[in-house]
Length: 290
Image 1 (tube, rainbow, N blue to C red):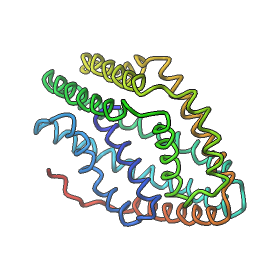
Image 2: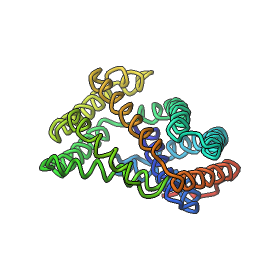
Image 3: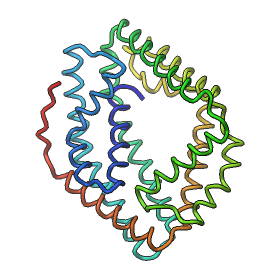
């Protein structure tokens, strides 16, 4: 992902996590500040000139109008279906699986909608801007690699376990004893498939290098399709396998949910659906300068 499409998906993911924490006001304010947040995300890695900033504003606002009017109501409808399934007593795993399948379709729709605007913006970048992006990104990747270079297997286990616990706590509350035991049982398999910190760092750098190389043809049509096609096939297979494994574990954990957790999830999902529906009808008047 690059520029607008990357910024949108990163920020939306963060907002959904915020919504899952029960912060309804934060979701609404955040969504209405989405352009500003996306600009901040981009400014970390590339300096746009005045004309590019204006173009970004126009492209992003058009994308957000489409997203607000056409996608938020669909998200809300899917969440209401999930809430009703929970209320009927359907196993959480199967209910969530259907919701995740719908979310993947919505994510692809967002990606497709963002592509033309992203390609138009990328075509305006100068060689010096690409070089500066390359420098900043390599620096960030190096910092990330050094931060985790000395992680022990136990460090990685604790980090992995903590990520699962924190993520699920936003939606269902604290994990119960059965779920914690399921997490511990899943770790040996996860560890066997996990790459070392050095391997992960090398893979991130290789992806970045392919992106920068691909940007040499940024003024030719079909850039993002070419970048996707240039991805390492083994990386794609590994990524898909990682997602499938995480999804299977999520379903297993949710199938072990108790009544307290089901009630918490239903209330959270229902509130999020209400918020998204309200946002879909709201016309943002947020200033875009900056």
